[in-house]
Length: 380
Ligand SMILES: Nc1ncnc2c1ncn2[C@@H]1O[C@H](COP(=O)(O)OP(=O)(O)OP(=O)(O)O)[C@@H](O)[C@H]1O
Ligand SMILES: [Mg+2]
Image (cartoon, rainbow, N blue to C red; front, side, top):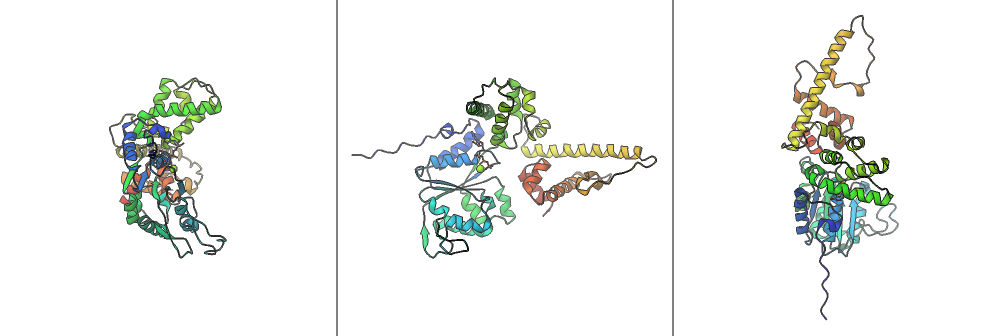
């Protein structure tokens, strides 16, 4: 009797719960289809909320390993001291608290796929070990002396700019090359605006069904706003907005004004940008920055005028706490934009204690742009 061939996996995005017909999305999807059946290590990049987890699941589901486990490990969520024993397992008594021997994720994922999310958070020491394992598929448990052999396909993901992490010496170049064998970049929602309506309808449908809300629908101008908003939090943000607006407005028809009151920080960004732009996002960001600086300059002139006018018999001045002190104090009449930009960046970095993601957000620029500028200005 001939053996029945297993049914080939479905290969359309919708077979994997993904909405996407835009060119940018389909381009990424082509690569997903191509590499899914292979053993090759894949690095998935993309901003937060773009769908990296979903892509990793689709890669596994379209691979010959689909009947075997897919393990999702968030490298940023495991305390540094436990990482190695979590990944590679440990033997009884190998450290305080190791009362039993335990298999690590590599052993648990044997035959299947290991999804290493937030790979950029991996400490350098663990990076060395991971590279060795990727190359040989052999390792020892912590405190062990027996070589373990596994057959695991690794998919990694990051929303960090690993290139610049490499140039800063925070991520090993050799591991980067190894992981980067195939890179799938999941586009931001801004780069795939033609998918926004489909996504809106998908999320609308889901929220109405689960909450049993009859929904009167979006007006055309609300759809247009959805399509022109900048979605800094990408698909995740959009899903949250749609859920919120439908639930809080109790299923009433949503027009532009109503929707606008539920949109977040991306709105200011969008107001300052032409909706259809032929400019690169970098150019657009630069323009935005310059506009913000001009606004500051106007505010300074205004303050100066007020000070001069109000200083008659000496208006009482309340001291401003340093963290609230405006940019004004550092400006001279002949300030230059670059100097000002540099100062703003230094302040943001200080204020958020070196957290670049938060600093970039506060500055209203992309994290990657911030990295570049830090390098450009030689800011540590
Ligand atoms: N193409 C898509 N179609 C439908 N839903 C999507 C799509 N992409 C993302 N989503 C939804 O958006 C949310 C975020 O997706 P996901 O968790 O995969 O993003 P991520 O890139 O891994 O985010 P993070 O960087 O924060 O880990 C999820 O609720 C997911 O269901
Ligand atoms: Mg994720």
